[in-house]
Image 1 (tube, rainbow, N blue to C red):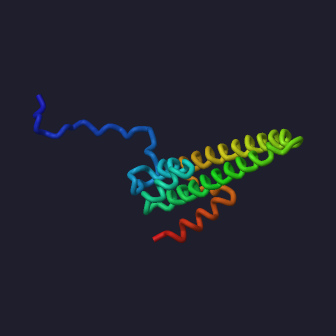
Image 2 (image 1 turned 180 degrees about the vertical axis):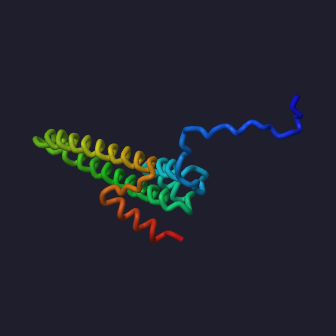
Image 3 (image 1 turned 90 degrees about the horizontal axis):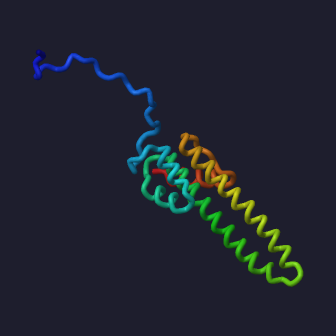
Length: 147
């Protein structure tokens, strides 16, 4: 009978075949890619992670890009609402403007949604992806605010 005070002679279990999540832990305690993906939520996620994350430039980049993207989305919504309010009340041509603006609004909304999904996927895979026109602005802002 083996002595219970002796260390076990059984070999350690083999390592699991599942890869460990990549990405260093951020100051929020989340892996870098997960924090960046959550920061991609337009405006709110970006603001929260831009304030909380002080070290990881990957997360800060996606947070700043999300803030700018959210503002662009809001500005577009305001411009659409104003144009819709003005043009639909014009006699004789208001109906056609209403249809045209509705189609434009739908197409732009789908484009915003596609860009939002792409940024989340790119962040989760650990790829730094610039949204056209917005990414370079965000990169410049993050680099200028780096400690």
